[in-house]
Length: 580
Image 1 (cartoon, rainbow, N blue to C red):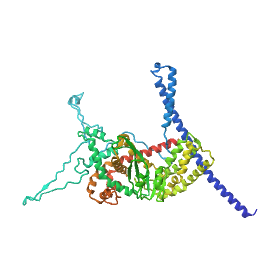
Image 2: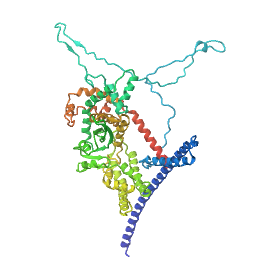
Image 3: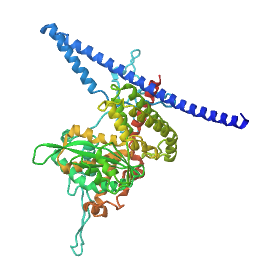
Image 4: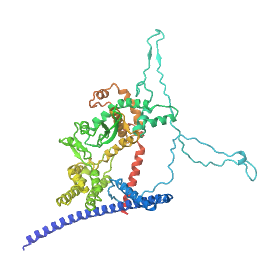
C-alpha cells in the first residue's frame, strides 16, 4: 500500500473516530437526562407514597378512635378498606398533571437572607405617643428627689386607618357686567368620567380595580363601603361600571389595533358562565386573552358566547405573524394561509408525556429527558441574554443563533427517536403513551418553530398567566349577567392586565386614565370606536400603559418586582436541592 492510500485511510479513520465521539457525547447527554428524569420520577412517587401512608394513618386513627365500640369490628374493617381505596383513587385523580422542568444551572452564591422586620418608611405619617412616669413614680428611692429625663427608648407600631370619604364640591363662578346688568357667563366644569355622575376618578378606579384586579364582587364592595360610613348599593356600582366600560372602550380598541401589529401574539381561552336573559339559566361563554410582543406589550381580552372558531378568527383578522396557542382545532382556519404561522407550546406537549409515566415509564422518561435538555438551554439563555426591560426586549439574534446551535440537534435526535419508536409498532393505539406520541408528532413543526427567531418562546406561559385573572374572578362573582356584561368585563380585564404587564401600578394609571379620557369624548378615537372601526387615531397614545409609565416613573408597580425577585430566589433554591 502506497503512502497516499495509507494517508487517506488514516484521515477516513480519523473522521469516523470524530463522528463516533460526537455521537457518543450526544448519547451520554441523553442518558444523563433520562437518568435525572427517572430520579425525579422516583422521588415524586416516594413523596406520593409517603403522603398516602400519612393520610391512611390519620384515617385509621379517626375511624378506630372513640367510635369503634358502636359498630362491629369486622364491619369496621371492611368499611375502612373501602374508604382507603376511595381515598387512594381520589388522591391519584387529583395528582398534579404538570411538574416543573428538571433544570440545572450554574452554581450561584447563596445570598444571606435579611432577618427581622423591614424598616418602616420615614415619610409615612407618624404619631408620637410619649409614655411618662408620674411624679410619685419618678421619686428617687434613696433621697426622694424627682429623677430627671436622660433619654428615650423608641419602638414603632404600624396602625391601619380605614379609607375615608371626601366630597369634592365644584363651584362654578358666575360673572355679569355691572354696567349692562346682563351678559351673564359661568365657568366651565371639567369633563367627568361619568357625566352628571357621583363618583370621582379615584372612586371609579377603585371600583374597577377591586372587581377586576382584586376579584372583589360588587356585593362585597357594598359591604366594605358600608363599614366606612357611606352606603353605595351594588346596582349603583354596576351602573358605574357600564358607563366606565363605554368610556374606556376606545383605548382598548386602540391597544387591539397596535397588538395586531406584533411579530408574535400569545393567546389562550378560559370559560365563564353567562346568564341567558329571560331563561333563568346559565350557559358557558369564553374569555380569550391576547398578548402582544415587546413593541406592543398590551393584553386585550375578547368575549364570546361559545368556543367556536369565529371568535379568534374575527379578532386576528388581517394579522400577519406568529400566533402561539394550544392545539385547539379552531385555530386551524387561521393557520390555513401563509399569513399566520403556528407556534406550539412545549408545556402542553410535556403534560401528555408526564401523564404517561405510570403507563410506560421508560419511554415517557426518555421523552421528558429530551424536553428537560431543551428547557435547560432556555434557562441558560435567560441568564446569558437577560431581558432588558419589562416588555421582554433582549438580544434576539444571539438567542436565535444559540437555539440553532444547541436546541436544533436535540430536536432532531428527539424526532428520530419518535420515528423509531413508532416504526416498531409497540405503541398501543388506545394507550396513554400513544396520546403523547400523537400530540407531539401532530404538533412537531409548530413545536420546533420557536427556534426560528429569538423573540419566540418555547412555552405559552405568558398567555396562561393572563387566563388566571378571569379564572380567579369567576370563583368570586360566579357569572356575567349577559353579553354586554361579558364584553364590559373584557374591557376592564384588558386595562388591568395591560397595566400589570407593563409594570404600572394599576390604581394610579386608572385614576389618571378616567380623568383624561373624558376630555377626548369628541375626538377621532371615540368616533372610530363608535363606528366599530379600528382605532387608528394616535390621540390616546399618551395614555397607553408603557408610554404613561415613561412619563410617571414614580408609579411603577414595585410589589411585582419584589415578587419576581422572590420567585427567582425560590427557583434557585429548588435547583440546589435537586442537585444535592
